[in-house]
Length: 508
Image (cartoon, rainbow, N blue to C red):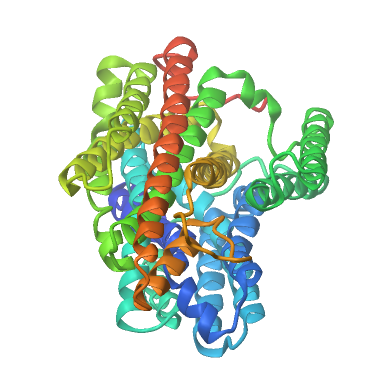
């Protein structure tokens, strides 16, 4: 496809990249709402269910840098198409042939590889086909689709489980992937590193080991305990591998990820802003799914519908953030977005069990608006700080910061919630539970419901106490998120440049 045709088709290409991106983001969260049904059908225990979820995230996040580098070297369209094929094939295998938790875990891991090929390719292709003056708008729309993918994933997952079965969560991928594949074959050009830079196999192995170990540590921390000897050992290995990776990349002639990129404040602070904004978003979504289902008694689908104000706030903010950046500067717009996220968390600390949903809807919309003003300009700053020949690696670094931030948000947000829940949980006087544990909120709600069904009114007291303790934990978690967003806003305001010149020589 010649340059003229690429230019003419750029908005169609952006639509195809957005569709491909949504497929990846959907699979990050869609399966979560199907876990209860899968546990019954596949006789999966808690460990199996955890690995069904985590195998995708671990492989996806761990291989992002390598897959982005392969796309740069051998062609981003090829990486995109191969990734979509892997996602579609693994989804079909899980839907039609999986009859054990092990089968699903293997399929999810294969989907993680596919997603790691797709996501960096989508953004790097957008960077290549759009001229400089339209890049901010295009990245804003790309970011918008990345941001709404998770809430839509919850909605799709809830619909699939309520109306069909857990297999539908995988089946729904297939027609969407086929459409993206066909349109990609027709419209998407193939672009790659014109310098044909040699690969960095040692750096690739080290990046997978470092990122994979760090993500594994984050995922396992709430279970092992943040200060346990196992956690300290795994974290130490992750930090050590990261150090070795950095030293290798500094020394090797053709590094996979040139470390001097991080000398640019736009690149490093942009990644920090993306990571911490994702921390807040995924942590909040995690706690609110529990809130809507277990405190307010909604089904998975009803809970997911209540998330819609978030993407409704995010979409216009992300899509139009380029205009604000042109007028006020990247640092001011990103700092404003983070400040709005802080405000949303502050308002959320006033929420009570009987608060009207309209208050929650406004908080979701404000949070989404702040997310849009943060993620879109921060992504543009990151991508403008690196040369186009490294667009795949730059995109992968951007995506990895989202994954690490999201994983940290769920792990830390969940740990804070659980800590404060246990501090405030009071077993009603006269209720003898023996060895039955009440460490988890869902367990307490289940036991309380069973007691009520038997006519024991102490079950109602147990439920009320558990709900109160959960709300205390949820408020504490929101407070942590608000503090993190505020610190992030200050750092960006003070140290991120207002304007970032597009870099064509960063690797030299």
